Image 1: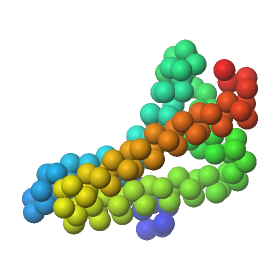
Image 2 (image 1 turned 135 degrees about the vertical axis):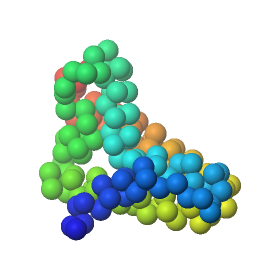
Image 3 (image 1 turned 90 degrees about the horizontal axis):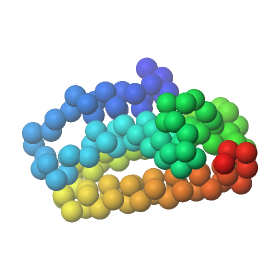
Image 4 (image 1 turned 180 degrees about the vertical axis):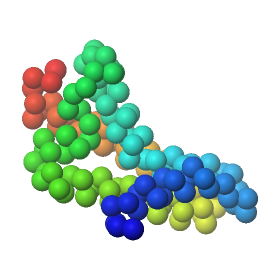
Length: 134
C-alpha cells in the first residue's frame, strides 16, 4: 500500500465502520470527515457554478486541484496537498471517536468553518487570478 492510497482506505473504512462502543454524538460525522476532500471539492464546484449561473454538470476548471494550480502551486504539490488533507481528516475522524461528544462535535464544527472559509478564499482568489471566470 502506498501513501497515496491511504485516503481511499480511510474513506472505505468510514463507509464500513459502525462503532458500537462509541456514542453516536462522537461518531456520526466520521464518514463525513473520511470523505471530506471529495465532499469539499463537490461543494466548491457546485457553489462556484451556481454563483456564475452555469449548469452544475458542465465541465470547467473550478475544482480544488485546478484552483491550487491557478494559485501557483506545482501540480505534484497540489495532488500531495489534497492527499494530505484527506489523510489528516481521516486521522482526525478516528481521534474524534475517543473524545467526549461535545468536544468531537466542536472539532467537527471547526473543520466545517475552516472548509467554508477555504471555499470563500478559493472563490475570491480564483476570481482575482482568472477574471474571465465571471
